[in-house]
Image (cartoon, rainbow, N blue to C red; front, top):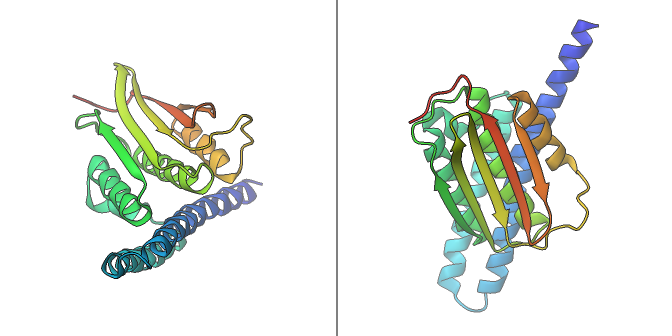
Amino acid sequence: MSEYIAKDRERKRIARDIHDSVGHALTGIAAGIDATLVLIDINKEETKKQLEKIQIAVKQGIKDVRKALNRIRPGALNRYTLQESLKKMLKEYSDISRIKIDFSYHWGSADFEKTTEDVVFRIIEESITNSLRHGHASQVSIVCTLPNKNTYQMVIKDNGTGAKKIIPGYGITQMKERVAIINGKISFDGHDGFKIVVDIPAEGDTYD
């Protein structure tokens, strides 16, 4: 029985990693192609630059898929701090899709466990993907704050179409499962765009 549970957990983990790597890469590429189609009859040089960015995204997507299959955490987190990794990922999304992203990081030099870093990274990545894919948003704001000494908080809000009734799909379900792993809380609001609030307990982590 315990072996079955372990295998089931591993299957779910691999499914999450593949969903994250392939889904996010394809969404970014699709948005980039949409932008290219608009530019192609207006500015050939800008179109070429956009295609070069898409080419980079495709190559990165292939690398990420390989990493997912090898159960490796997000590549950027192996080389940079959490803040730097997020900035890098968000810049790539912004460059490819032309979505405007405002990112404010007020967690100082918070020292998270690797699992918590993975959760933060993936939730923000998933949120941007949903803003593009479902909300058709042109702008997203991401604010990482410390509302009190016991909580790290992320507020992610876009100016997309929102949702009067939120029906959890694979992405939202995965976000809930990820936050539960680190004993956090997550809420969703589909009025006036789409808003996600994540509270992460500070116990066990250090911050400035």
